[in-house]
Image 1 (tube, rainbow, N blue to C red):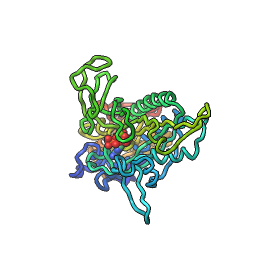
Image 2: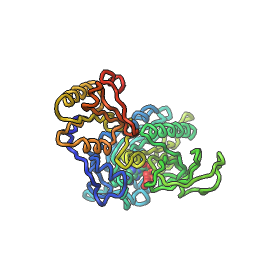
Image 3: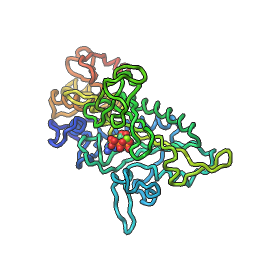
Image 4: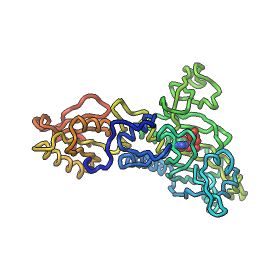
Length: 414
Ligand code: ATP
Ligand code: MG
Protein backbone atom coordinates (compact mmCIF):
# COMPACT_ATOMS: atom_id res chain seq x y z
CA UNK A 1 0.00 0.00 0.00
CA UNK A 2 1.06 3.59 -0.61
CA UNK A 3 1.81 5.43 2.59
CA UNK A 4 0.54 8.65 0.98
CA UNK A 5 -2.91 7.01 1.08
CA UNK A 6 -2.71 5.67 4.64
CA UNK A 7 -5.09 7.92 6.53
CA UNK A 8 -3.29 7.63 9.87
CA UNK A 9 -0.39 9.91 10.72
CA UNK A 10 2.43 9.27 13.14
CA UNK A 11 2.76 11.47 16.21
CA UNK A 12 5.98 12.87 17.70
CA UNK A 13 4.60 12.77 21.22
CA UNK A 14 2.37 10.26 22.95
CA UNK A 15 -0.74 11.56 24.72
CA UNK A 16 0.13 12.68 28.27
CA UNK A 17 -2.26 10.27 29.99
CA UNK A 18 -0.80 7.17 28.33
CA UNK A 19 1.90 5.79 30.59
CA UNK A 20 2.61 2.35 29.18
CA UNK A 21 5.13 1.75 26.42
CA UNK A 22 2.73 -0.33 24.33
CA UNK A 23 0.01 2.30 24.19
CA UNK A 24 2.49 5.16 23.67
CA UNK A 25 4.17 3.49 20.71
CA UNK A 26 0.97 2.08 19.22
CA UNK A 27 -0.80 5.43 19.39
CA UNK A 28 2.23 7.33 18.06
CA UNK A 29 2.59 4.84 15.18
CA UNK A 30 -1.11 5.18 14.26
CA UNK A 31 -2.00 1.58 15.14
CA UNK A 32 -4.72 2.36 17.65
CA UNK A 33 -6.90 5.26 18.79
CA UNK A 34 -7.85 5.71 22.41
CA UNK A 35 -11.56 6.13 23.08
CA UNK A 36 -11.44 5.98 26.89
CA UNK A 37 -9.50 4.16 29.61
CA UNK A 38 -9.04 0.55 28.49
CA UNK A 39 -11.00 1.05 25.27
CA UNK A 40 -9.19 1.41 21.94
CA UNK A 41 -10.13 1.43 18.27
CA UNK A 42 -7.91 -0.43 15.81
CA UNK A 43 -6.73 1.55 12.80
CA UNK A 44 -5.47 -0.06 9.55
CA UNK A 45 -1.97 -0.94 10.78
CA UNK A 46 -3.22 -2.11 14.17
CA UNK A 47 -6.00 -4.21 12.72
CA UNK A 48 -3.50 -5.97 10.46
CA UNK A 49 -1.40 -6.98 13.46
CA UNK A 50 -4.46 -8.09 15.43
CA UNK A 51 -5.66 -10.20 12.50
CA UNK A 52 -2.24 -11.74 12.01
CA UNK A 53 -2.17 -12.86 15.64
CA UNK A 54 -5.76 -14.11 15.33
CA UNK A 55 -4.89 -16.11 12.23
CA UNK A 56 -1.91 -17.79 13.88
CA UNK A 57 -4.21 -18.81 16.73
CA UNK A 58 -6.87 -20.00 14.30
CA UNK A 59 -4.34 -22.16 12.44
CA UNK A 60 -3.03 -23.75 15.61
CA UNK A 61 -6.50 -24.36 17.06
CA UNK A 62 -7.73 -25.90 13.80
CA UNK A 63 -4.59 -28.09 13.81
CA UNK A 64 -5.66 -29.67 17.09
CA UNK A 65 -9.25 -30.26 16.09
CA UNK A 66 -10.79 -26.90 17.00
CA UNK A 67 -14.13 -25.93 15.42
CA UNK A 68 -14.72 -22.20 15.22
CA UNK A 69 -18.07 -20.67 16.17
CA UNK A 70 -19.29 -17.19 17.07
CA UNK A 71 -21.43 -16.92 20.18
CA UNK A 72 -23.38 -13.82 21.08
CA UNK A 73 -21.97 -11.09 23.28
CA UNK A 74 -25.36 -10.73 25.01
CA UNK A 75 -25.69 -13.36 27.70
CA UNK A 76 -28.96 -14.21 29.45
CA UNK A 77 -28.94 -13.94 33.23
CA UNK A 78 -30.68 -17.29 33.76
CA UNK A 79 -27.70 -19.26 32.42
CA UNK A 80 -25.34 -17.52 34.81
CA UNK A 81 -27.72 -18.16 37.68
CA UNK A 82 -27.48 -21.89 37.02
CA UNK A 83 -23.80 -21.78 38.01
CA UNK A 84 -24.19 -19.07 40.63
CA UNK A 85 -21.78 -16.77 38.81
CA UNK A 86 -24.22 -13.96 37.98
CA UNK A 87 -23.49 -12.17 41.26
CA UNK A 88 -20.23 -13.80 42.36
CA UNK A 89 -16.60 -13.40 41.16
CA UNK A 90 -16.95 -13.26 37.38
CA UNK A 91 -20.35 -11.60 37.73
CA UNK A 92 -18.65 -8.66 39.43
CA UNK A 93 -16.63 -7.82 36.33
CA UNK A 94 -19.60 -8.26 33.99
CA UNK A 95 -21.27 -5.26 32.38
CA UNK A 96 -24.99 -5.69 32.80
CA UNK A 97 -27.93 -3.99 31.21
CA UNK A 98 -31.67 -4.20 31.57
CA UNK A 99 -34.21 -4.73 28.84
CA UNK A 100 -37.79 -4.47 30.10
CA UNK A 101 -37.75 -6.70 33.17
CA UNK A 102 -34.95 -8.91 31.80
CA UNK A 103 -31.27 -8.54 32.67
CA UNK A 104 -28.52 -9.22 30.15
CA UNK A 105 -24.76 -9.48 30.66
CA UNK A 106 -22.05 -8.62 28.14
CA UNK A 107 -19.82 -11.68 27.81
CA UNK A 108 -16.65 -11.61 29.96
CA UNK A 109 -16.17 -15.36 29.22
CA UNK A 110 -18.46 -18.05 27.75
CA UNK A 111 -18.46 -21.26 29.86
CA UNK A 112 -22.19 -21.05 30.66
CA UNK A 113 -23.25 -20.20 27.12
CA UNK A 114 -21.35 -22.98 25.42
CA UNK A 115 -22.26 -25.59 28.04
CA UNK A 116 -25.88 -24.71 27.30
CA UNK A 117 -25.35 -25.17 23.56
CA UNK A 118 -23.53 -28.45 24.09
CA UNK A 119 -26.21 -29.94 26.36
CA UNK A 120 -28.71 -29.32 23.57
CA UNK A 121 -26.59 -31.10 20.96
CA UNK A 122 -24.52 -33.82 22.60
CA UNK A 123 -26.13 -36.99 23.94
CA UNK A 124 -23.63 -39.84 23.58
CA UNK A 125 -19.98 -40.66 24.24
CA UNK A 126 -19.65 -41.25 20.50
CA UNK A 127 -19.99 -37.49 19.97
CA UNK A 128 -17.10 -36.64 22.31
CA UNK A 129 -14.50 -35.18 22.55
CA UNK A 130 -15.33 -31.75 21.14
CA UNK A 131 -13.12 -28.67 20.90
CA UNK A 132 -15.07 -25.47 20.21
CA UNK A 133 -13.60 -21.99 20.01
CA UNK A 134 -14.30 -18.43 19.06
CA UNK A 135 -12.38 -15.19 18.58
CA UNK A 136 -14.46 -12.44 20.05
CA UNK A 137 -14.55 -9.12 21.84
CA UNK A 138 -14.95 -9.58 25.58
CA UNK A 139 -16.13 -7.02 28.11
CA UNK A 140 -14.93 -6.74 31.69
CA UNK A 141 -15.19 -3.97 34.27
CA UNK A 142 -11.50 -3.47 34.94
CA UNK A 143 -10.97 -0.84 37.62
CA UNK A 144 -7.26 -0.49 36.77
CA UNK A 145 -7.27 -0.12 32.99
CA UNK A 146 -4.02 1.82 32.75
CA UNK A 147 -1.68 -0.39 30.75
CA UNK A 148 -2.86 0.16 27.20
CA UNK A 149 -3.73 -3.05 25.40
CA UNK A 150 -2.56 -5.13 28.34
CA UNK A 151 -5.74 -4.45 30.30
CA UNK A 152 -8.75 -3.53 28.26
CA UNK A 153 -12.33 -3.13 29.41
CA UNK A 154 -13.18 -4.21 25.88
CA UNK A 155 -10.61 -6.63 24.45
CA UNK A 156 -10.18 -9.43 21.93
CA UNK A 157 -9.91 -12.98 23.23
CA UNK A 158 -9.71 -16.46 21.78
CA UNK A 159 -11.60 -18.85 24.02
CA UNK A 160 -11.73 -22.58 23.38
CA UNK A 161 -13.75 -25.06 25.43
CA UNK A 162 -13.17 -28.80 25.35
CA UNK A 163 -15.69 -31.50 26.25
CA UNK A 164 -14.65 -35.05 27.15
CA UNK A 165 -16.11 -38.36 28.22
CA UNK A 166 -13.20 -39.22 30.55
CA UNK A 167 -10.63 -37.53 32.76
CA UNK A 168 -7.93 -39.42 30.88
CA UNK A 169 -9.03 -37.99 27.56
CA UNK A 170 -9.21 -34.50 29.05
CA UNK A 171 -5.64 -34.77 30.38
CA UNK A 172 -4.37 -35.91 27.00
CA UNK A 173 -5.90 -32.84 25.32
CA UNK A 174 -4.74 -30.45 28.04
CA UNK A 175 -1.12 -31.38 27.27
CA UNK A 176 -1.73 -31.02 23.53
CA UNK A 177 -3.10 -27.54 24.23
CA UNK A 178 0.00 -26.57 26.25
CA UNK A 179 2.15 -27.38 23.23
CA UNK A 180 -0.15 -25.51 20.84
CA UNK A 181 -0.06 -22.44 23.10
CA UNK A 182 3.72 -22.49 23.29
CA UNK A 183 3.86 -22.65 19.51
CA UNK A 184 1.39 -19.78 19.09
CA UNK A 185 3.38 -17.48 21.36
CA UNK A 186 6.64 -18.50 19.71
CA UNK A 187 5.18 -17.61 16.30
CA UNK A 188 4.18 -14.23 17.78
CA UNK A 189 7.79 -13.67 18.86
CA UNK A 190 7.14 -14.29 22.55
CA UNK A 191 8.74 -16.73 24.90
CA UNK A 192 5.93 -17.72 27.27
CA UNK A 193 6.60 -19.50 30.56
CA UNK A 194 4.03 -22.10 31.64
CA UNK A 195 3.14 -21.06 35.18
CA UNK A 196 0.98 -22.72 37.83
CA UNK A 197 -1.75 -20.37 39.00
CA UNK A 198 -5.02 -20.23 40.90
CA UNK A 199 -8.41 -21.11 39.44
CA UNK A 200 -9.80 -17.58 39.98
CA UNK A 201 -13.50 -18.45 40.04
CA UNK A 202 -13.27 -21.01 37.24
CA UNK A 203 -11.92 -24.05 39.12
CA UNK A 204 -10.50 -25.10 42.49
CA UNK A 205 -7.49 -26.80 40.89
CA UNK A 206 -4.28 -25.17 39.66
CA UNK A 207 -4.61 -23.63 36.23
CA UNK A 208 -1.73 -22.87 33.88
CA UNK A 209 -0.87 -19.37 32.79
CA UNK A 210 1.39 -18.44 29.90
CA UNK A 211 3.56 -15.64 31.27
CA UNK A 212 5.88 -13.36 29.30
CA UNK A 213 8.64 -11.64 31.29
CA UNK A 214 8.33 -7.84 31.06
CA UNK A 215 8.80 -5.01 33.55
CA UNK A 216 5.35 -3.58 32.68
CA UNK A 217 3.66 -6.86 33.66
CA UNK A 218 1.15 -6.81 36.52
CA UNK A 219 1.88 -10.38 37.59
CA UNK A 220 4.83 -11.63 39.60
CA UNK A 221 6.08 -15.16 39.06
CA UNK A 222 8.63 -17.34 40.82
CA UNK A 223 10.45 -19.17 38.07
CA UNK A 224 13.44 -21.27 37.27
CA UNK A 225 15.98 -19.95 34.72
CA UNK A 226 15.60 -23.27 32.86
CA UNK A 227 11.83 -22.64 32.76
CA UNK A 228 10.89 -26.11 33.87
CA UNK A 229 9.14 -24.69 36.93
CA UNK A 230 7.14 -21.52 37.50
CA UNK A 231 4.41 -20.46 39.91
CA UNK A 232 2.39 -17.29 40.12
CA UNK A 233 3.43 -15.54 43.33
CA UNK A 234 -0.25 -15.50 44.40
CA UNK A 235 -0.19 -19.25 45.00
CA UNK A 236 3.56 -19.95 45.22
CA UNK A 237 4.63 -22.48 47.84
CA UNK A 238 8.28 -21.51 47.39
CA UNK A 239 10.17 -18.23 46.95
CA UNK A 240 13.00 -16.57 45.05
CA UNK A 241 16.39 -17.82 46.25
CA UNK A 242 15.08 -21.34 46.93
CA UNK A 243 16.04 -24.19 44.65
CA UNK A 244 13.88 -25.30 41.77
CA UNK A 245 12.06 -28.51 42.80
CA UNK A 246 12.83 -30.17 39.48
CA UNK A 247 16.31 -29.04 38.32
CA UNK A 248 17.70 -27.52 41.56
CA UNK A 249 18.70 -24.20 39.97
CA UNK A 250 18.07 -21.07 42.05
CA UNK A 251 14.58 -19.63 41.56
CA UNK A 252 14.05 -16.01 40.47
CA UNK A 253 11.22 -13.59 40.97
CA UNK A 254 10.13 -11.53 37.95
CA UNK A 255 7.37 -9.33 36.64
CA UNK A 256 5.38 -10.79 33.79
CA UNK A 257 2.34 -10.46 31.54
CA UNK A 258 -0.29 -13.24 31.45
CA UNK A 259 -1.00 -13.73 27.75
CA UNK A 260 -2.87 -17.01 28.06
CA UNK A 261 -4.54 -19.19 30.66
CA UNK A 262 -5.81 -22.75 30.48
CA UNK A 263 -8.23 -24.27 32.99
CA UNK A 264 -9.04 -27.85 33.97
CA UNK A 265 -12.73 -27.36 34.74
CA UNK A 266 -13.68 -30.95 35.54
CA UNK A 267 -17.44 -31.14 36.04
CA UNK A 268 -17.75 -27.68 37.66
CA UNK A 269 -20.06 -26.40 34.91
CA UNK A 270 -21.62 -29.59 33.59
CA UNK A 271 -22.79 -30.46 37.11
CA UNK A 272 -24.51 -27.13 37.77
CA UNK A 273 -25.97 -27.06 34.28
CA UNK A 274 -26.92 -30.75 33.91
CA UNK A 275 -24.75 -31.41 30.88
CA UNK A 276 -24.76 -35.22 30.63
CA UNK A 277 -23.86 -37.84 28.05
CA UNK A 278 -24.63 -41.57 27.87
CA UNK A 279 -21.38 -43.50 28.20
CA UNK A 280 -20.33 -46.78 26.56
CA UNK A 281 -21.67 -48.69 29.60
CA UNK A 282 -25.14 -47.15 29.13
CA UNK A 283 -24.78 -44.92 32.21
CA UNK A 284 -25.56 -41.22 32.31
CA UNK A 285 -22.43 -39.22 33.19
CA UNK A 286 -21.33 -35.58 33.49
CA UNK A 287 -19.27 -34.13 30.66
CA UNK A 288 -15.69 -33.24 31.67
CA UNK A 289 -14.55 -29.82 30.52
CA UNK A 290 -11.55 -27.58 29.99
CA UNK A 291 -11.33 -23.96 28.91
CA UNK A 292 -8.43 -22.19 27.22
CA UNK A 293 -8.05 -18.43 26.72
CA UNK A 294 -5.62 -16.16 24.92
CA UNK A 295 -5.80 -12.39 25.12
CA UNK A 296 -5.22 -11.47 21.48
CA UNK A 297 -5.09 -7.71 22.02
CA UNK A 298 -3.05 -8.22 25.19
CA UNK A 299 -0.62 -10.37 23.19
CA UNK A 300 -0.24 -7.49 20.72
CA UNK A 301 0.53 -5.14 23.62
CA UNK A 302 2.94 -7.65 25.17
CA UNK A 303 4.85 -7.95 21.89
CA UNK A 304 5.39 -4.18 21.88
CA UNK A 305 6.49 -4.23 25.53
CA UNK A 306 9.09 -6.89 24.68
CA UNK A 307 10.12 -5.84 21.18
CA UNK A 308 10.93 -2.13 20.95
CA UNK A 309 13.84 0.29 21.24
CA UNK A 310 14.12 4.05 21.80
CA UNK A 311 12.99 4.68 18.20
CA UNK A 312 9.91 2.51 18.07
CA UNK A 313 8.39 -0.92 17.66
CA UNK A 314 10.26 -3.96 16.25
CA UNK A 315 7.55 -6.36 15.00
CA UNK A 316 8.33 -10.06 14.79
CA UNK A 317 7.93 -11.16 11.15
CA UNK A 318 4.82 -13.30 11.43
CA UNK A 319 2.64 -10.62 12.96
CA UNK A 320 4.08 -7.46 11.36
CA UNK A 321 1.54 -5.26 9.53
CA UNK A 322 3.76 -5.40 6.42
CA UNK A 323 6.92 -7.36 5.63
CA UNK A 324 8.73 -4.58 3.80
CA UNK A 325 8.83 -0.82 4.28
CA UNK A 326 9.94 0.51 0.93
CA UNK A 327 11.22 4.06 1.01
CA UNK A 328 11.50 6.43 -1.90
CA UNK A 329 14.24 8.91 -1.04
CA UNK A 330 13.66 11.43 -3.83
CA UNK A 331 10.44 12.32 -5.47
CA UNK A 332 11.98 13.09 -8.89
CA UNK A 333 14.07 11.63 -11.71
CA UNK A 334 15.29 8.10 -11.93
CA UNK A 335 15.02 7.44 -8.17
CA UNK A 336 11.29 8.03 -8.33
CA UNK A 337 10.92 6.08 -11.55
CA UNK A 338 12.81 3.05 -10.26
CA UNK A 339 11.01 3.17 -6.92
CA UNK A 340 7.61 3.17 -8.60
CA UNK A 341 8.58 0.28 -10.85
CA UNK A 342 10.02 -1.79 -7.97
CA UNK A 343 7.01 -1.10 -5.78
CA UNK A 344 4.62 -2.28 -8.49
CA UNK A 345 6.71 -5.44 -8.95
CA UNK A 346 6.85 -6.19 -5.24
CA UNK A 347 3.12 -5.62 -4.93
CA UNK A 348 2.33 -7.86 -7.87
CA UNK A 349 4.71 -10.49 -6.47
CA UNK A 350 2.49 -10.62 -3.35
CA UNK A 351 5.06 -8.98 -1.12
CA UNK A 352 3.32 -7.22 1.77
CA UNK A 353 4.87 -3.83 1.24
CA UNK A 354 4.22 -0.36 2.61
CA UNK A 355 5.60 2.16 0.11
CA UNK A 356 6.61 5.51 1.52
CA UNK A 357 5.90 7.63 -1.55
CA UNK A 358 5.04 10.75 0.42
CA UNK A 359 6.30 13.84 -1.38
CA UNK A 360 6.00 16.21 1.57
CA UNK A 361 8.32 14.34 3.97
CA UNK A 362 12.08 14.61 4.36
CA UNK A 363 14.16 11.47 4.31
CA UNK A 364 14.85 11.99 8.02
CA UNK A 365 11.13 12.04 8.74
CA UNK A 366 10.58 8.94 6.61
CA UNK A 367 13.29 7.01 8.42
CA UNK A 368 11.95 8.08 11.83
CA UNK A 369 8.44 6.91 10.89
CA UNK A 370 9.86 3.68 9.54
CA UNK A 371 11.61 2.96 12.85
CA UNK A 372 8.51 3.91 14.83
CA UNK A 373 6.15 1.67 12.82
CA UNK A 374 8.63 -1.19 13.07
CA UNK A 375 8.17 -3.22 9.87
CA UNK A 376 10.86 -5.97 9.85
CA UNK A 377 12.68 -4.92 6.67
CA UNK A 378 13.47 -1.50 5.20
CA UNK A 379 14.36 -1.09 1.53
CA UNK A 380 15.73 2.21 0.24
CA UNK A 381 16.39 3.35 -3.31
CA UNK A 382 18.62 6.41 -3.82
CA UNK A 383 21.08 7.87 -6.41
CA UNK A 384 23.87 6.24 -4.43
CA UNK A 385 22.32 2.74 -4.53
CA UNK A 386 21.27 3.13 -8.17
CA UNK A 387 24.88 3.91 -9.12
CA UNK A 388 25.53 0.31 -8.04
CA UNK A 389 22.31 -0.96 -9.64
CA UNK A 390 21.22 -1.86 -6.14
CA UNK A 391 18.85 -1.11 -3.29
CA UNK A 392 19.81 -0.76 0.35
CA UNK A 393 18.30 -3.26 2.75
CA UNK A 394 18.23 -2.97 6.53
CA UNK A 395 16.45 -5.15 9.03
CA UNK A 396 14.65 -3.29 11.83
CA UNK A 397 16.39 -5.41 14.47
CA UNK A 398 19.88 -4.97 13.00
CA UNK A 399 22.18 -1.94 12.87
CA UNK A 400 23.93 -2.59 9.55
CA UNK A 401 22.47 -2.06 6.10
CA UNK A 402 23.58 -3.91 2.99
CA UNK A 403 23.28 -3.47 -0.76
CA UNK A 404 21.38 -5.98 -2.84
CA UNK A 405 21.37 -5.87 -6.63
CA UNK A 406 17.99 -4.95 -8.05
CA UNK A 407 18.15 -8.03 -10.28
CA UNK A 408 18.48 -10.21 -7.17
CA UNK A 409 15.83 -8.46 -5.11
CA UNK A 410 12.86 -10.77 -5.61
CA UNK A 411 15.05 -13.83 -5.03
CA UNK A 412 16.52 -12.16 -1.92
CA UNK A 413 13.07 -11.43 -0.48
CA UNK A 414 11.93 -15.03 -0.99
P1 ATP B 1 -6.00 -10.88 34.69
O1 ATP B 1 -5.59 -11.72 35.86
O2 ATP B 1 -4.87 -10.25 33.98
O3 ATP B 1 -7.10 -9.92 35.03
P2 ATP B 1 -7.64 -13.06 34.03
O4 ATP B 1 -6.84 -14.14 34.65
O5 ATP B 1 -8.82 -12.53 34.72
O6 ATP B 1 -6.67 -11.86 33.64
P3 ATP B 1 -8.65 -14.92 32.08
O7 ATP B 1 -10.04 -15.04 32.55
O8 ATP B 1 -7.68 -15.97 32.42
O9 ATP B 1 -8.08 -13.50 32.55
O10 ATP B 1 -8.72 -14.62 30.51
C1 ATP B 1 -7.97 -15.33 29.53
C2 ATP B 1 -6.96 -14.41 28.87
O11 ATP B 1 -7.58 -13.22 28.39
C3 ATP B 1 -5.90 -13.91 29.82
O12 ATP B 1 -4.86 -14.86 29.93
C4 ATP B 1 -5.44 -12.63 29.15
O13 ATP B 1 -4.49 -12.91 28.15
C5 ATP B 1 -6.70 -12.12 28.50
N1 ATP B 1 -7.31 -11.04 29.29
C6 ATP B 1 -7.99 -11.16 30.44
N2 ATP B 1 -8.41 -9.97 30.88
C7 ATP B 1 -7.99 -9.07 29.97
C8 ATP B 1 -8.11 -7.66 29.83
N3 ATP B 1 -8.77 -6.95 30.75
N4 ATP B 1 -7.55 -7.06 28.77
C9 ATP B 1 -6.90 -7.78 27.83
N5 ATP B 1 -6.74 -9.10 27.91
C10 ATP B 1 -7.28 -9.76 28.94
MG1 MG C 1 -6.17 -15.77 33.89
